[in-house]
Amino acid sequence: MPKNDGKMTYVYDDYVFHYEKQAGICYLCMSDEKNKHRIPFAFLEDIKTEFAMKYGVEAPQTAIAFSMNEEFSPVIERRMDFFNSDDADRTIDNIGQVKSQIDEVKDAMVQNIEKVLERGEKIELLVDKTDRLNQQAFRFEASSRSLRRTMYWRRIRCYVASGVIAVLVIYFASVSLCGFDYSHCKPKNH
Image (cartoon, rainbow, N blue to C red; front, side, top):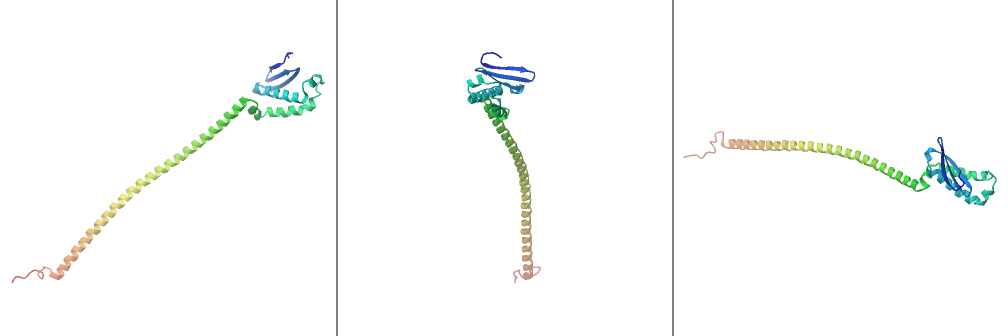
């Protein structure tokens, strides 16, 4: 490791070692290839801040190796759990927040597409119902036209039958009053 303060990454097989050195204290973590650099260095920065808040800068310089291990390991474990969760990826920096926003937009788009497809199915059902109603309306129109014609001819037959009956009644009334040859109703010539 270099003597100067700074950050560095070393790769060995599938493992990546990240370290940050500041004020003579080296903070080191190991991750797999998928984590790249963003999350491990955020973890190291967080641990460095926690460690400095707990012990300051001077105490670690004179401490015996591993003397702070027992007291600080629960903090490391808690922070490791956080940085290995999906929440860390979404909250540690702007990239995570952008990823969160992209996921939210993607979810909203998926929901909107599902709604559009649902509406499409409903529209299809409405189109089918409209077609059926149109066919029923056409059949109704045809049957009402046929019924109107039938009623018209029935009325005409009724008028014709009434007229024939009226003519026959008048004829039989005149025959009964005037006789069959209408001799009783003719004026007599003297």
